[in-house]
Image (tube, rainbow, N blue to C red; front, side):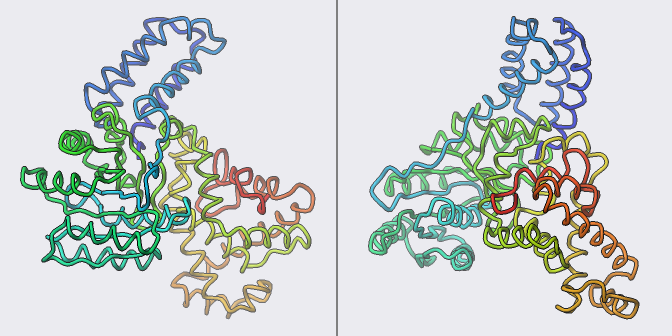
Length: 468
């Protein structure tokens, strides 16, 4: 998300930071570029106007003219105002009610409500330590009920069965009673969607909302619909007492107009963003951190939180202790580290959160690095346990067999072995300077060109305690 906008803004800021001092004319010129970039990102015109006015007011005042570095002061203002436009700070869910706290998901068909209900259930179970039940009140699409049941089983939460011949209000009331009996903290209600906003749909969902009285009514919307997402959110907000928005499919949205428009148009905060089909691809929306991502400054805090939640701490600690004690590192260890990166959303998922990635985006491709990682995993998984533990025995005939088993070429095996040998040397540095220094040295050796300034080498300082 925001790839195009980030690129445009970084070019604008590059020219303005070179200025010795900022005048009213070059600030206006920079703001013209910023305005154009926002409009191209499909941000709603009223939102662009008020944003530019606020930045201009602050930039032409004392704040920039008295600064030692006017260019940086200007970028700081843009960052703060971007965060303000998106809601200033993260707003969590409200659980201040007698259990179960009912969360109702609303939105158009195809926005990803059912998947988001399961993602949210997993998030609340793992991050908030809540006991969760999910129920489908979508009586128009029997497949939605089956889909939610499958997902509930996958994420390990309670599922309340329903059928297409029941009344949505009756379904949810019975689910609430069952949730109370099971001592569930949260009940997530998936509702029916339509292909477009219509009066019948709005009346039905209003009646359901009034009968159920959820503590949270979340509007689920596809980020790729851009300005339309904000307008649809506004229509739903006028019909329902929305408490927040969940933006889905943000991984396919290169513009980001929805994220920048929704808060200002509806007055409701974006509480979560979903990126990808996986059930753990949901994260809290932090406007201040997102502003940093847009301006290529990364989002280290979210990266740390993700590492703590998704990296296997016991394995990480065991690996760090092994390397610190012996300096030994085999292909089993290498495979484990690749899998830990995959658990955190893969290289593509990490790229937007690493500082400086905007500046080297031209030299790097998250997709290419992702393919390279998968290829490396396939190669290692085609080896015998003995070969993984003793890579020195991998010679001619073994290389041919591994290449055939992994669908690669002998040259790919040679490339992996070369990278691995370099990594083994780096591991010996663990005894001297710890994981942080080792990761710095490792930066240039990672697959897919992920080394260098702002690359995965920066992960060393962000790893959880066991990995430092």
